[in-house]
Image 1: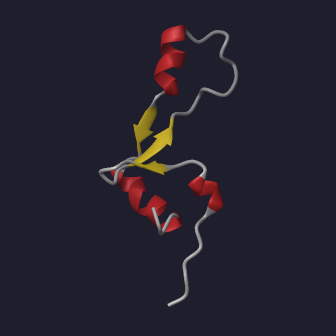
Image 2: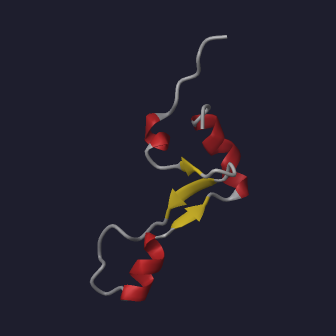
Length: 65
């Protein structure tokens, strides 16, 4: 079998934890931050676990994750 190619766009957006979960960034932290509270922005800075329904798609894009 030939080697599988990694989708580079996905590789920049997702990371795997030691236990094998896939982590992602939260949305809404790029612009229009002036009216958002400090607490909201701090919560958006944290990583989130990819939903189990999306996990199969992400793993397909990242074969060696």
